[in-house]
Length: 82
Image (cartoon, rainbow, N blue to C red; front, side, top):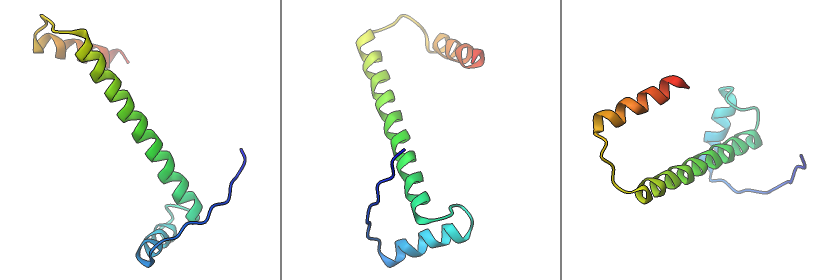
């Protein structure tokens, strides 16, 4: 994978925070921390998109005759099957 060098500006407080994470052993350098933030942001946004898709699907599927209890029972069965 190609690496692209970027220049970013931080406040002194932000820089101190990043350095403290590195000193505590969470990251080996600034770049590793920033890449981790980006990966987490990408995953978070993917989850939001997936949730939105599921909400739209639910809204478009219309009403149901199922009870809340039967819906929960089905969800628990699906969860346990995984």
